[in-house]
Length: 270
Image 1: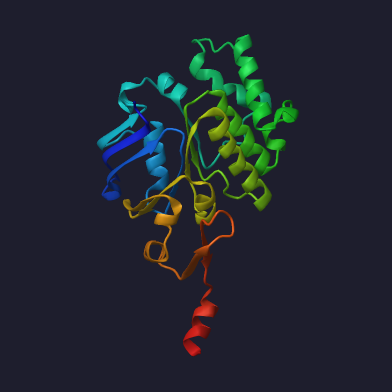
Image 2: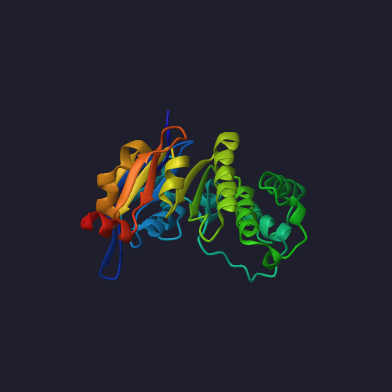
């Protein structure tokens, strides 16, 4: 029985002469919360866009639910995989309800006329993300956290089996970060959606990720459960900065603390 939602074989990608990804091979199991972390320029967003079909693989292969992603039409792929980008277009003249309903495009005909079923699914997605009360507001009137949940609702409206998110908590305050992450956890547990998330927050990756992929310069430094990947040695070598790794009081997962320069200097002096 097939258990992989996404399988990557010897994937490489370049922009001009710059090699962004170098012969990556790994799989994402169905139903996992899979987090991708690494320094700036490590290839995280490029990898996610390749999974989403936004970029085409130059070398290697990507399988989505057991089939090469090139075998899907754009509409067919959008029924299986939803992508929430890091930067969202907020100047669109749409209300919340209209923006969420855009997620039904892969199921509509050439005229794009919504049916009663489309409206019902959009309403369910807004209820799930708790933005239904914002239905008639323009997207530009919302806070950052509300906007993020609206675009997640749009992705849920696609009824995907795989959800890809590029730094969904970037620029959000602590309360909204946890709210978005809990929403992704709920999506995984209640709707059996495989969640793949790029994040710069190593601690959030440790708290929520069933599996963590650690990248540096387009290569895999580590892959596995957070406790096995997020070690002091791997993280210091990958990020090139001083940090501490101990055990969080929450479930015994790794906790990462940056060490400011003034403490390093005082340690040398002492």
